[in-house]
Image (cartoon, rainbow, N blue to C red; front, side, top):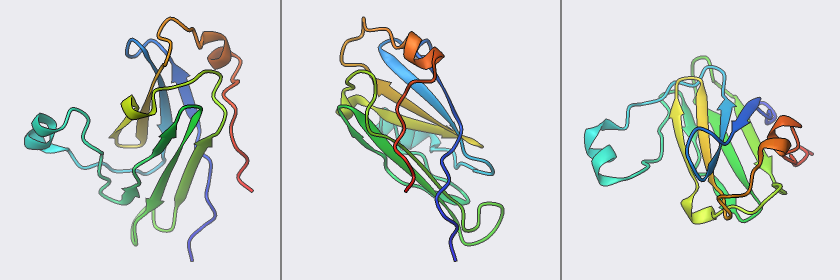
Length: 135
């Protein structure tokens, strides 16, 4: 039986890529496949694929997002389910321009700011990105 969803730890910054807020989401035990050269050439931001988990395509909307990662049938992530949802971000994002990348143990979410001159720094520093409850 699968475990209940766990909300992962994360860190946020707006210095990683101009015009974006990056959320670095910790997914313990996640192993990621390399996208390969052809996938990198064909797609600007290919969707990452886990070796031991399914990284679901996140849903983005103008005020938030939802990301789910489900562990595979064997190994360190067996039965694991990570769910990260924010319904009310401090400012709007451009949902169509948001994307994720992944590396072992981490998923990087890049949220495209609607107003690139709007600083999210205070909200990041105060840990004030509103998170939906896991009810």
